[in-house]
Length: 65
Image (cartoon, rainbow, N blue to C red; front, side, top):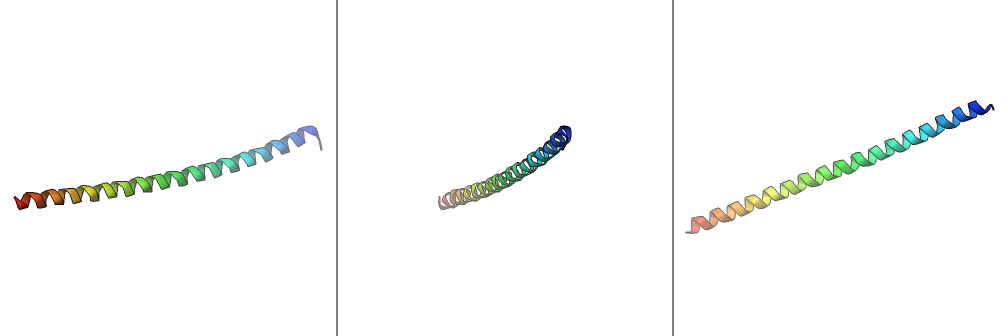
């Protein structure tokens, strides 16, 4: 095998390995982002529920007086 050809084959192979690693990294980042978005959505939902419960309690107390 000629040296330039061998170098070209190695460069192409390494490029494919690197591209594969980049795809895996992006997939992990996308998954992590999706999990964080879901967590924030759940936290907002819980906060809304808590706020509504507090409002109901305040309204019930004000009705008693």
